[in-house]
Length: 259
Image: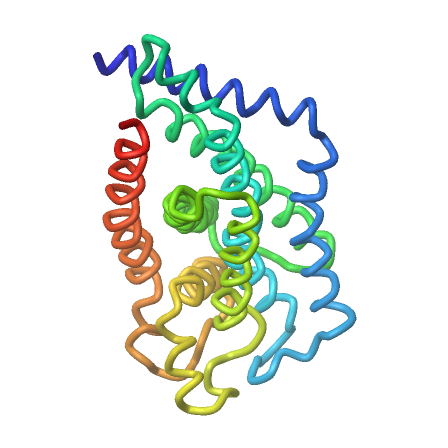
C-alpha cells in the first residue's frame, strides 16, 4: 500500500514538473523575483537599520528566509484551478492513492524551492556575501530553509482549498507580504518600536533568518532576547508546529472535498 502511494505521488510530481516545461516563463519569474528584491534592498535601499558590519552579510540570510514565503500563490492557484476544472474529480475516479495529489504538488514545489535557494546563494556570493561556517552548517541552513518552506506550503495548500476559487487566492496571498516583512530580514528588532520588535522576534521567518546568520558565522539579532538566543531551536520548532497543525487540516479538507 505504501509503495502504491509513493508511486502515485511520484506520478503526480512528474505531472507538476511537466508544467514547468510548458510554462517556463512562470518558473523563471518565480526564481527571478526574490533575486530582484535582494538586489534592490542590497543596492537601492540598503542601509540596514541596527546592523553592525557589512549589510550584505545580514541581508542575504534574511532574503533566503523570506524567499521561502514567496511563490506560494502559484501552488495555491494550481490547487484551486484543478478543483475548479474538475481535474481532481478525474483523479479520484482512478485507482490511485488519494494523498498522491497533494503530495505530488508539495514535492514539485519543494524541488522548485530547492532550486531557488541555490540560485539565491549563488547571487549572494556574487554580490559579496561569504559563508564562514563549514559545509555541514551550510547544509543545516539549507535544511532549515526548506523546512520553513514545507510548513508554508501546507498552510498555502489548506488555505487554497478553503478559498476554493483563484480570485480568492489573490486576497489570501496579500497576507504573505505583511507577515514576511514583519521579520528581521531587512532590519534588527532593536531598531524598531518596542512592541513591533517583540512581534518580529517571534516571527517564524525571523527565527530561520537568525539561525542561518548564526550558522554562516554572521551575528544575528544581538538584543539578548530568548527567541534570538535560541534561533536554531525555534527555526525547527516553528515549522514542525505549523506542519502539525496545517497538514492534518489540509488532508481533512481534501477528504471532505472527495465526498
